[in-house]
Image (cartoon, rainbow, N blue to C red; front, side, top):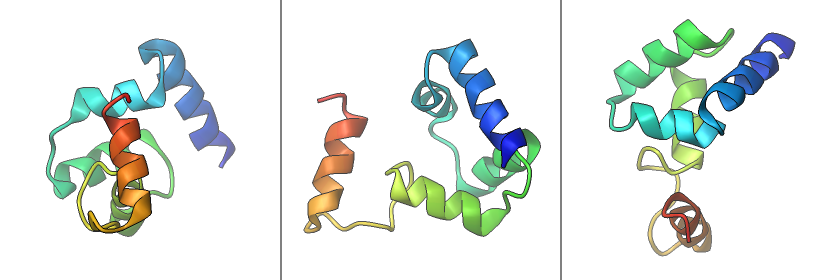
Length: 80
């Protein structure tokens, strides 16, 4: 956990935010995302990476457009 937290801080310092770093990597398929996360963080396999990306709106699957959370995530991702 400490290693990953320090990595996020390092990424934030280098790119301005963790989101900016993710946006630089977009679009990627799930296999590329998993490889990136495995090479960057510790204890991040396919499921963890997929769940994180779905919950933050980088890949589809977590929230349908009828879900209130979908609109919140979409709004955040579009900078509104």
